[in-house]
Image (tube, rainbow, N blue to C red; front, side, top):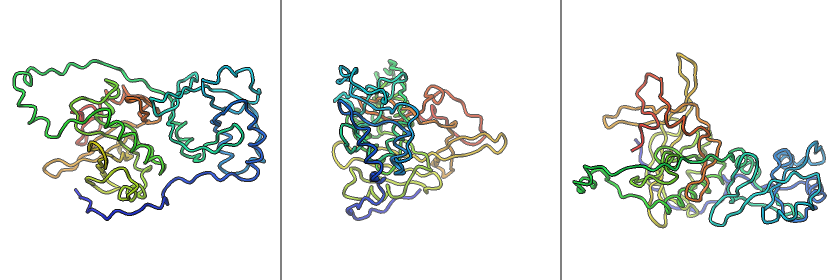
Length: 345
């Protein structure tokens, strides 16, 4: 267990941010021809965006229509579009932090991306991040179950609660807003966190935060972590401060952050590592843990697929595409473990 020694705050220079697009001359000219649209439209075509990213638009050969997103408020203009476009309408609810696309499979992506405008065409300027948004856009609904939590013991002996809940309960709405802010700051570095632990279970089971929880949990694939983000956490521009740091980046790493403003909701960030069963050859994911007697544990997860999107109190978060399987799976590995469902308080 290692505790991070406080560092003096500094002004971050943005060196670790994913870089904005600089359009080449050929791409700008090509887009000027393409951008003759009757209303503002968001370019969401993956093939075209990749060509813009490498700056070789003089070699673009469109065999199919260019996919664009159009606000459903302009649906009345549907007869005005050129056949070179494939339209996907989206809703832009001011009470939510994502765009909701009305495709065959519902898709949602964060609103927090920059665009450059050429004519009526809006082009995302941080293309690698935008493409990852789209890759993770398939919407997964929560179960919205009603949980019965009235324990007879707690009802008869309310003083027991202060011994069971050592830390204060967190305010659900404000805590989710803080988690969304952390998500936004991570994506600037190309990091894509997903709901984990009790936060994941609360979303899937009840579409909210478990009412007696005292922190929030997210995870990141270890290969997606970047040390530049940890440096950023110690800057004045970070909306969070580091509360603790455990383990090493290459083994059992965990960092807890709290917002600098508002309720100090602890947010635990776990790195999820790749592993392989030496007997069966099957892959798995794991996070590290340490028992009170110093023994190390691996908490085993089945192969993880956090490439879908969910709504938690009006905010978009990424989740596994197979949530029920991840909650109910039993793990066959003969090492000290606690399964996902067993780790939840």
